[in-house]
Length: 107
Image (tube, rainbow, N blue to C red; front, top):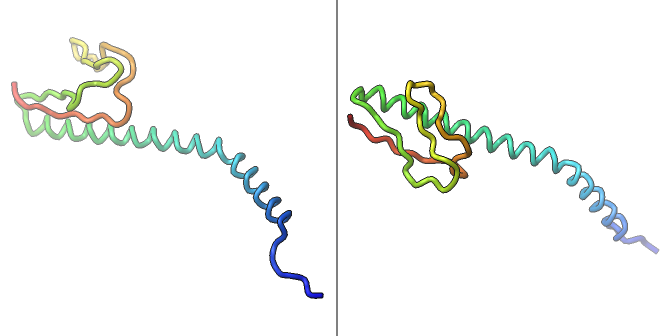
């Protein structure tokens, strides 16, 4: 009698179990990789916004003001301290996700 070619049910179940264990072992690495990727994206968006603000400020020596394009949905509004220390006067997080701002020009 000729044996049928292919996989048995037990072989298939063992293979699926091994793949599941390997996937579970890789989950912490995937989560940390995704979090670092989100942080890098947020950092790049921030630097892009800073570069655009600098370019607008250089083109308009009369003065510029950066305001949020949409109302903040959470956290505290950040304002520059008098005296130009560069630190914000309010702590806390900003709006979740990428923030958009518009630049108004004028005195």
